[in-house]
Length: 124
Image (cartoon, rainbow, N blue to C red):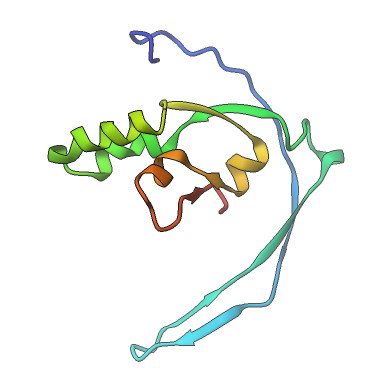
């Protein structure tokens, strides 16, 4: 993909199975416009006997922050965005553990950009 359109070499991994338990609603707020908002915390416990790998397995996946950067910011700022990507030593792909990809890790791009919350993950 990054090598002049070469086909990527893919390997299927997983499944990685978690038992999820919804916890009681938390921080319930009723607004003036008659809407209710709340936080629904949950717990997730890894089920190794139902998984085809470990949470420490290394996965190479798309770096969402790097891939999205050009479309999130206006074209006039792309030079600055490239500077941040270079300074963070970022690439279009990254290798992380299953735990990091699912539950969160400190993203060097978001940290370099001084984001309010530099943690990212699919279920963070």
